[in-house]
Image (cartoon, rainbow, N blue to C red; front, side):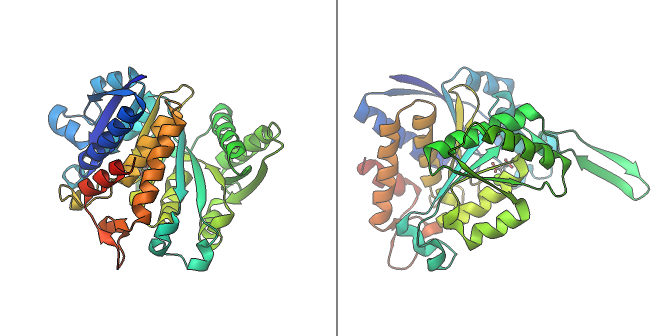
Length: 356
Ligand code: IPM
Ligand code: MG
């Protein structure tokens, strides 16, 4: 089969981890007889430098016309003082919105080989951590009305947290569907003791639950959820939550995997077009040094094969190759511990390809 992929490598370590991802995808393509056509487009800080805006229309057009989008990372200190709507992060939010990618899947899996890199006590993670965070991605306060106004307490600023029934229903449904394919346990996270938007959210989740009698549903307030996650991480299966709560909880969950450098993500809408990116940022401090961990990006490539192209076997091949390399003791700096073999970005990519 032949697939058209838009590549937004972005800033910082984005391009170097993307390079390894593409080498891995090409190797899998060769093995199984698929060809991938890559269209490189600019988004984030590099687009600001070239076009004066983080998300040029051309980038949106190319992404829309592709079978899927691969994203590296965006942002950096050079662009930190720009106004909100001109920042590199706008590229991410803009693409998610323009492509209708409302469901963000962030799996946090602890590889047994990395148990030592997990900051939690060994007995807390002995049963294995395997959590799927399903984060709503195009609503809530990241997309709600924002602004500033004068008050008698000085200037005030606001970001409105707003969710409609339809928005909640489609993400809840996605959460239940994914739970059906996994351990049939869904945890809804909200703040319904305080927020009106959460009260609507929870009532819709409960309504959707009627269509999934096999799934065990429980509800947690977000503050409690953040605590339970580190107290009993192995008891979670799928978590469904809003944009901002998912942003925060997925970073927390990432730490159970040893490093945020291990966490891939998929952003999906109603069709097969998806955007795949590591959960980590652009890490400008280590960019260009060949020390960044490419695994999160490579695993994002595997998610693309699975969720956008339906190539489950090929995706599993990549995941297995990553597991093998870890089992053999190869580590990038972020997951390194004594006695292991420290390797750079490129070498990690090469080792994974060698084991495909
Ligand atoms: C993420 C990031 C982004 C988000 C930022 C960079 C806009 O933190 O993907 O989690 O908040 O969604
Ligand atoms: Mg985040």
